[in-house]
Image (cartoon, rainbow, N blue to C red):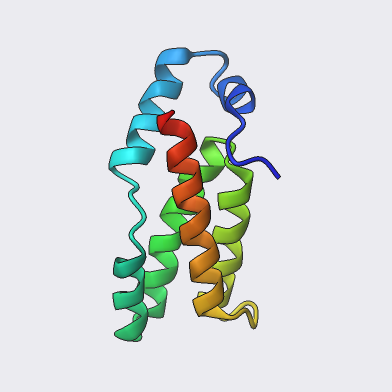
Length: 108
């Protein structure tokens, strides 16, 4: 599963390099995923807010063809919404690791 498929992401924006650059910048600045923020929402039993927080990052990952992050985000969101019996702490660790991996790849 790809961490970031730049070619596919470029295809989604009809080859518009400038638009892809804007989406990447938005992902890095506006859609920052912070595990501590998610942990605080979960500790406060704000599961709906936690799911929405994950959903935003997962959506941005989908736009940028970050399959690994999109998949781990979907699994975590489903667990937070009660749609699956996933291990939330483990899923959170996986999503955080996938996010860091994607950010590192994009920044290089």
